[in-house]
Length: 217
Image (cartoon, rainbow, N blue to C red):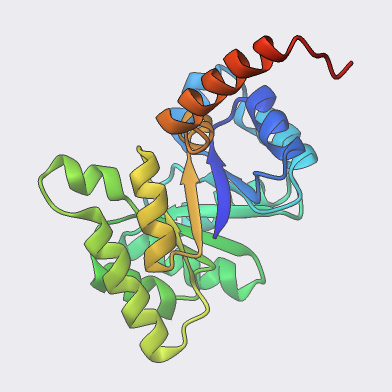
């Protein structure tokens, strides 16, 4: 499973990228707001750090304006994935932009039917939001499973990009289901390395090593 990092924090992206933990980056208007930076400037910097897809989201609501914004964002770098919402106009924009050979990430997906439409429109990525479904007492992981089944049934090339990943269990379950990509904040990706038994084991090793009176260096 590919790891995309859901942030515009370039220092965090560099750290994870240096460890080989970043296959791409996703941003949205809320993330750009949090960064406090100009969207074109920060996105260009991110694209210079990461070789994989970097999602940059349009903010227009009608198809023609989405297409214009998407083309502008795609000029930033070759690895831009234009992010459009899963609305009828967003699907129209997806069809045009993907037809021009651009990567398109269709976002804010909350049903398998929506995901099917996005694949038909030529989306490179579909972004179902796990955490937001959990917030309204629906199982977001069920949606990942449904999309996986539908895409496998018909051989769609659209990659399932599990989004709104909030916990390490989300990450594990997405991998078990077969999501192609997971996008998560740096904190969630780092937390995947944590386990209480690892901590307890290291603590015991430290105590035992001290008793040997030895040094390696």
